[in-house]
Image (tube, rainbow, N blue to C red; front, side, top):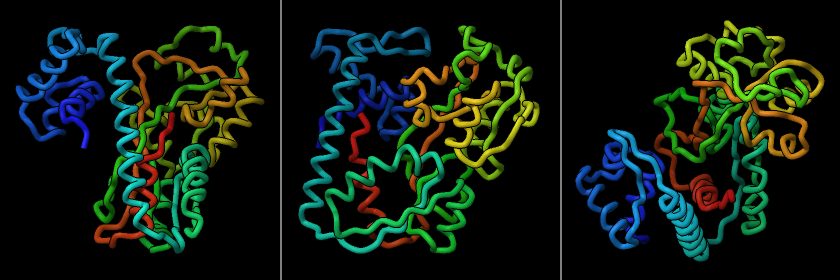
Length: 297
C-alpha cells in the first residue's frame, strides 16, 4: 500500500548495494537507480555517497531511512489491525523458541498479544535450535523461533529480526580498558560458551572461522546452556563471552558489563520463524503476522 519508491529506497539503504536490492525487489538495477534519483530530485538532496562500487547513506539518507521504517511500521500495524478486526481468534498456540528469543525477544510480544487476544492460550516451549527443530518435527509445537545458519529442507523459514553478538566482559576486566583487540588476542583469554546444538554457538563458530580462528582454538572455561547463566558467571569471573545485545541491555545500563570491540569480527544473525512445509493457515500464522507488526522501538 505504501509508495514503491520508498520501498526501493529502504531496500537499498538496508543492503547498501544496488544489485542486491534489484534482485530482492525483482526489478532491474537501472530501475532501482531511477527510483532513487527521483526521490533525490524530489527532496533536492543526495541520499547516498558513492565511492566506486561502495555506497553509504548521507545524513539526509539516514533521516529518510528512520522515517521510512516508522512509516512501514505504521502500515504493518494498520494492515494487521484491519485484518484482525474481522477475526475472532481462540484456541491454543504451541510456540517454541530458542533460549535467547524466549528470554529477551518474545516476552513483550506475548504480553501485547495476550492483551489483544485473550481467548488465545499460548504454551511456550524453550530449548536450543536443535531441540526446537526436533519438537516441530514431532508436532509438539506449531511453530518456532530459532537462530543459526543451518537450514533443514523439512521446514520453511521466515526471517524475523536481526541480532548482533558482541564480546562481553565484566567492568574492570583488563580488556575493558582497551579500545579494541585483534582476533588473535582472543586466544589469550578464557571463554564461556553455549552447548553444542545451540544456534548461538553455531553463529559464533561460523564468524570466528571467517576471521581466521576456530571456536575450538579458544580456551573454553565452561559450557553453559543459557545467556542468564553465562551473565551471572561473568559477573564473578575474568572470563569472556559472546552474548546477544538483546541479552545485556540491563547490565550495560547498570555499568556491570563492557563491550569489547574485536577488529575484523562482526557476528550477526537472523532470528527466524520456522514451520513445517504444508502446514495449514493457523493460529501460528496469525501470531507470526502479529509479531511482524510489533514495534521494537
